[in-house]
Image (cartoon, rainbow, N blue to C red; front, side, top):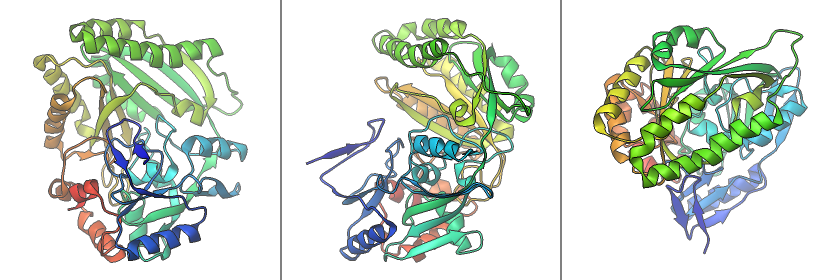
Length: 432
C-alpha cells in the first residue's frame, strides 16, 4: 500500500486509488466514473502546498502525464500547456521558443496548475500572480464535461477557476500569455531593516521586482532588486564557484546545519542570525529571467503567508518584530516580504487591492504553533488573506468577510459540483 506525502511532510494519504490520465478525454472519463460511484477525488501536482488542499480522501489523480507544451505561438505569446507541467520544465521549454513568463515565484518545483490554483505569486508592484498570466483553461467537471473558459467563454467559471483550490474540477490544460524572453539584472545587498522599512514604497515602486528578507533577532535585511536590462546588455551570470557557495553551500547545506544547531541549542539562534546577517555580501549579475526569479531550496520548513493591503505591511513587520522580541521565541528562518498589483480573480489574495505578502517560516524540527498563531492575530487586524497553500487556521466564516466574491465562487461551485466530488477536509474548512 503506497503512501503519498507532500514536500513538507505536513500532509499524507494512504490507501487511495491513484489514476494517471494521459489525455483530457481519459481524464474526463476517469472523473465521470469516480463521480458516478460517489467517490471523492482530488488532483495533485508536485505536492508543494503545506495545507491539505490536494489531499485525496478516496481517489488521487496524478497529472504528470499531462505535462508538455501543447502549442506555442511566438508571435502572440500564447502558449498552451498540460496542467501537470512543472514550472522548471515549462521555463526551459519557453526559453526554447525565446519566450518567458512575465513574473514567477521564487521556486520552480510546483506544477503550473497547482501554482495557479493556490494563488502562487512572485513580486512586482505592477505585476500580478501567476494566475493573472492565464488567458484560458480547460476544466473537467464532475459529470465529465470539459469546459473551455476564458474572459469571453464561461467568464464566471474563468473568474473562479484560475484560483480555485482545486474545488471546482480538474484543470487539464492552460493557455498562458507569455512575453519575449528577457534578462534581469539582479542586485542583492544587505541593508539596515529600518532603512528598508522607511523606504519601502520607493523600493517597491522603483524596481520591476523587489523583495526583502529580514533575519529575526537582527537589524539586517537582505534586499533583492531585479530589473530588466537595457537593449544591448548581455548576460553576466554568477560564476560557478560563487553560485555554488552562495546558493548551495550557504543557502542549503550550511543553513541546514545551523537549523539543526538551533534545535539543540535554541539560545544560540540570535547569535547565529547575527553571524549569518553579517556574512551576507552584495552581489550583482545578469541572467535569463527565470534563472534570476527561481532558486533552489532544500531545507524543509513550515510556512505561513498572508496578503495584507500594501499600505499596512510596514506596520505588520514592526508589530511582528515587537512580538518576537517580547516573546522569547527563537526564529532561525528569515521573514520574506513581497508585493503584487491588484487583480480581479475572485479568490486571488490580491483581488481588488495592491498587496504586500509577509511569509514567515520555521524549521520543521522546531515548534511553530505559537509563532504562527501570533502572526495570524497581528495580520487579522488588516483584513489579511492567507495563501491557500500555506499554513493557516481560517475557516469559511473568516474568508467570507475577506473576499468580496466569496459567494460568487460558492455559487459557481454549487453549479459545477453539486455533490462536492472535489472535496476534502481542507475544502470543508475554507468553503464550508
